[in-house]
Image (cartoon, rainbow, N blue to C red):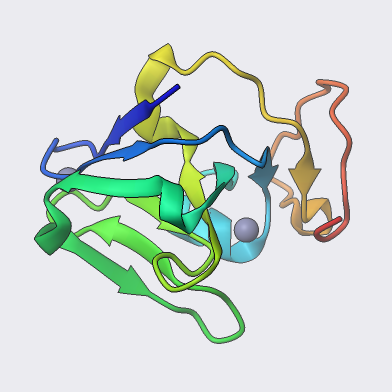
Length: 133
Ligand SMILES: [Zn+2]
Ligand SMILES: [Zn+2]
């Protein structure tokens, strides 16, 4: 099962060649700031299973103090990878990169201690963790 993802402008295309180890919604403050929303929704994969097919030269990374590298398309700003990609053993891949075709629900909510007043945490029955489980 190869999942093919892309950024908003289409300049970066990549594939993930192994099933995700886990998936989840992260509500930490970093994820809110980089997403412009409630947080990031990601699948965790072995970094070796993430292959950039096109537009590697467009990728740019930012590592916040106390956090891991987050990687964006420098043209359109789409947040594609986190968790220290490409130098970490496992990395996060943002599920919105796969578009509406990706049809599996995330498995958990993490960093719910950082849910903001303006943020709505869905009543979806998924386990919630104050930080990372
Ligand atoms: Zn782009
Ligand atoms: Zn986060």
